[in-house]
Each structure stands twice: as C-alpha cells, then as structure tokens.
Length: 492
Image (cartoon, rainbow, N blue to C red; front, side, top):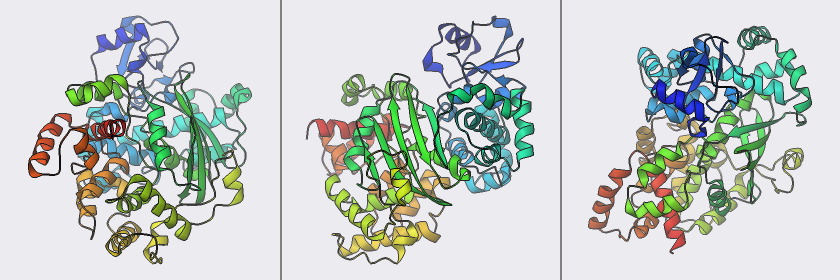
C-alpha cells in the first residue's frame, strides 16, 4: 500500500496512473471510489485508503455508482511480485472459492491455509473469502446493468450458490435489490442474444494494443482465431461446450469491449479471466518500462513503444502444442503445421457460434483438446517423428497427467514438469511459462531472436553474457524478451 498522503494528492489530480492501485473511502458517505472519480474531492480527514475493493467493502463501505470501482483496471498486478498471491487471485477469478474452501485453495497452491490468509492480509488488506465475495458481487452488478439475463442466471454466472444468497448479498452491498438497479439502467442494456454477454474491460496506460494485435495476427490459426486492425476473435472449449469471443479495442475510452458467446452462464467467470490474461490487461506497464529502460539496449524501444505487453493465450494446452510444434522452425512454418493439427483433430464449430456476433471472422473450428490429441493419428503433419512423440507426451500430461491443472502450478514446477517430457527443452518450457500461465519473469535464454537482437551468439560466452545482462531485467524478463523480439523484427 502506498502512502496515504500520496494517495490524497493523486486523488486531487484524478491521476489515471493510480486507477486500480488504491481505492478511496469517504467516512461521511460510506462510499468508496476510484482515484479518477468525477465527484468533488472530500476532506482529507474524511478519507480512508485501501489497496483493494475487497478491503474497502470488508471495512463496511459500498461501491460508488459514478466511477464504478468494479470496472477499474485489475489490481492483482499491484499486489507486488508475490507469485502465490497472483496465482491465488487467478484461481479465485476462475471460481475456486465458489464451491471450495480457502483450505482447498491453499492446498492447490502448495501452501498452508494460515500462510495464504496472512499473504492476502499483507498484500490486499482482505481475506481470500472477502476478495472472492467482492468479485462475485461486482460481476453480478455488471451483468444486472449490462445484460437482460434472468436474475437466476446472473446468480449462477457470478458464482452464487442460490438466488436467495445472491439477492441478500446484493441488497446488503448496494443498498437496493438487483431488480431496482436493472430498472435504473435498462436503457443502457446492449442486446446480446441467447447465452451471450457483452462486457467491457479497462486497461491501464500505457498500453500498446496495436503491437499486441499485430503479434496475435501473425500467429492466428484461420478458422480457430482471426484478427483485424482493432479486433480479435476466437473459438474455445469450456466445461459445458464450445464458446466464442469477439473483442474490439476502443482506444478513445481505453477499454476492450468483448462479446462472449457461451453455452451457459456458469462458465462466464473463467472466460473473463482468460480474456484478461490473453490481452495482459492487468500489467503495470509504467513500472515495468521504467525498469527495462535502464538497459541501453532496450531504452530506445521503451521510449518508442511504451506499454508493450506479453501476449497471452486462451488455453495452456493449445499453446503448449504450438510451442512444441514451433521448436526449431519459423513462425510461419509452425502456424502451417498447427493448422493441419487443428483441421485433423479439432471439432467443427456449430454454425450459430461461428456467425453469432463474430461478423466475418470466419470462425468454423475448435482447436483440439488434449484428449483429442492423445490417441490421434499424427503422421503426415510435417514434423519429425521425435517431435510427434513430444507432442503426444504433452497431450498425455495435460489430459490426465501432472499438467491437467496447469494454471494452478507454480512457474518453477510447470517448467520442471514440461522440461521433463521427452523431446521438450528449456526454450519450450520457458515460452509456455511466459505465455500460457503469464509468468512475468519467464525467459527463453536460448532464443535465437533474443541473442541476435543483442549481438550475441549461442556460444558459451554469449550465453554467459546474456545471463549476466538479463539478471538486471528481473522480475520482468518476459517483457524484455518481447521487446528484444521487436528489435529483431525491426532489424532482421
């Protein structure tokens, strides 16, 4: 948590750089706000500052209706670089505490229950259960105000076990029943159709979204995903059937507007988290750029292109397949082979999903699941036999092996597990950690593009120099890697 006096000064300037970094509660009104709230600045003596929305609500304050704290850029990135906290937040976002206990969550993370509670108290000022409760309520409010879903489905989508619990919690938090809030905002509801949700996601400046879309466009698999000048669309699997998303980037209002078509409201929460991870929406780019700009090799790129993010991926298994396929081949060659794999093993997308809300994106196929690949005929895809066996080993590990719950694994455990598979090396393990689970310090130190951008080679001396230089980039080596790839593309 930053100093209260700094918070108050930032509040006076409505500085957007602090949006999501702290929340201001006013003791005389019982309301908490974002730093950019248009309301007049309250007296200093009436202000309390909290590191998270959950902490403010746990202290008895309710969310402001003008600045809508639930739409602030995600704050997990401001929790520091504590890997356990960030992994826990991701799992909570996906609904880990909707049907499980804090002890169950701690067990998945490999830590003790008391230790996890202590970390949350130190970093966020609230317990894991309070964070989960706040996220459920804020998602529920967004659905009430921006969709025409029945309240029963709103309760399901936001993670409440029953409609009664949902109504009680909503009324307690927002001082009115959900039906009253819907009546107030009904004119603003955007019709999305059956099982579709239109949601907005704010980003924190700086954010070079054009670079991110360009990166995804060069690697897009036709039929499974598509990318335009200001939009991205793709298909995906959920626990209850196929889904699709069409996301449009709005630089004027600094947000992403996403239309999610899902088989059930119950799978909305994990889909939201995966979308945020795909676009790396929660990164603190200003702080990351400031650190990387200290290296002369990166300083000019930071000045020229502030806000570079690490493009994520929707599904860890899909990216693991593509990383294995991409070993020692070009981006274009890897995409060609991945297209063959999708055509041979992936399911055709239902017609209504391919056209519903996705314009002319041409979506017609799902990327295969691990179960699809395990026993599939992989001959003739254009890969050497050893790489085919590596791909099959990865599929087995994700299907019913140690990577079945990959997103909950600590980065070092994930690396060791992947590197232990036959035919999979350190480069592949690092790129999977980097893009599939969002490890900000992942670093493919043997990447030819990284070495060439720095004028180094694969010799022992070149690797030692790279190791020494990269130590100064920690814990943001993944972001340095993306920038070095940029330099190599600019100077092939």
